[in-house]
Length: 176
Image (cartoon, rainbow, N blue to C red; front, side, top):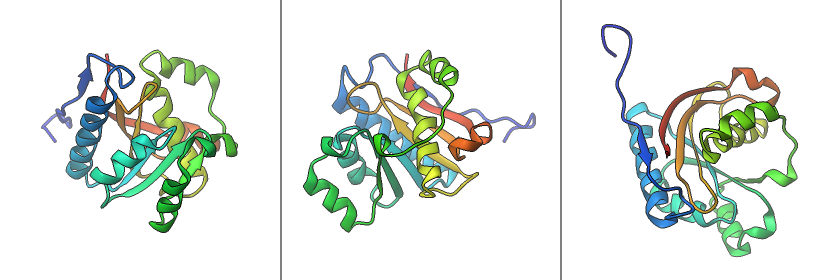
């Protein structure tokens, strides 16, 4: 922390979205997220993974972290993979199976920055609503555009009913 009470941190802006280059951009998003988590001592990661592909990659790179995956629909995931996650005690929430509140005007505003910027706070609230992450603590959220992950941020968690308590503290990476 500098004399002015500020710090300089790296933010990465991708020239492509994860939909355009899912393998490379997802791997880099995971690497950057892990590094920033290490720097800040954050161990809780909430990761959007519609079909389980990003979740599988995250398991390899973040296996020693506390992970929560948020998908869209249960039938989009491979059943063997869901069983593996259950055996490893790693929760998966499907947003079509839960109720939560996320103001549509806020979603629209965040989507102007990127789809992932809209999704990261959303998945943190979903995980907090299910008490799968500590409330009021910094977590790292990852999401993307279509396939893969291209956005990561540090978020102070809050339940959806307490949306105004949720704070986006840092962008780690996002597409331009």
